[in-house]
Image (cartoon, rainbow over all chains, first blue to last red; front, side, top):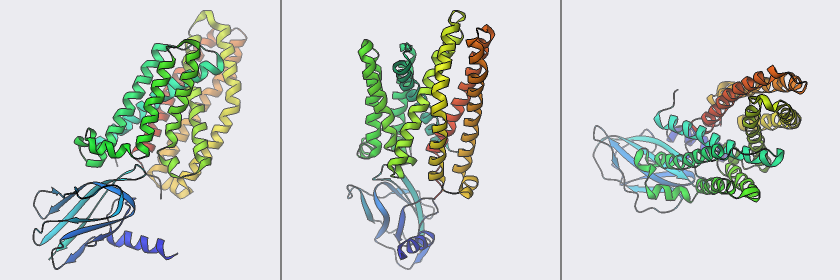
Length: 113
Length: 283
């Protein structure tokens, strides 16, 4: 019975503001500050999804799409490699398709100090 | 909050889809149930509208996956969609509407094909959407009943209005109006019950009904349905009895009343398109 409470807490603390987002966990967590640039970002969903587009905006740089070529099929956890671009705020926007046919999208952000 | 360009495009596509499915399927069904002749050119035009809306609707879902117009024709995105229930509904809708059209060129026996095509098309609606998401056989059954009943309603209106405008067809208009009235007396109460239960299952609470965009849009739809029922009741209890008594002016009034019914029906379908495309269910 703890799971819904846990999921709700995660949803409030760690994921994006988009309603009905199935994104349960992210690394780095939403609005977290990290000391070191992560080599990959992790998106954990509460169901199987196929990510179709993930873009990253760093500070004032133009947004760039992350490479999703290594992924296939509908899965619930994505670890996507990213290029370190130095300190600043990173905003990750994602779009995907749930295996039930629903188009899904959302975003999260974190800061590298 | 107003929907963006993609929201408006998907609402317009949904409205076209509803018209392009309900009019052809309804026309074919009433042709079988009530023995009415089909205006083939008209039914085929609407079925083509349904086909186009089906294809554009599928393509728009591709755009939702990339967030821009390239997704509409991206083979990878459309291929992904194809592998989900969205693809199943797309295939059922396309093939169903084509069978409906093909049947219209095959004489009396072709009507059977058209009916089967119509049922396949309607069946596509239990594969994707808010109701199928509930994963309840009862709700899916109610949705099928709801769609078939409104298709028949819409299917009757065209021939009834055409007859009402024909001064030579007074007795025929009265007879069709009466038969439709008898059918409606059975299926309208069932529709109200089915709609009430489905709405309750989808929205869940009085606070969600008044406090969410979905609930408020549903209230508008229900008010429009009440208006439609009022018009239909006027037809049944005022104009049809006068027609049966041979009153020529009642035919013109019935034809006008049906025009108003059309306006309300399109408004209802528009609200439904808003409910099913840009609004999410209260969680």
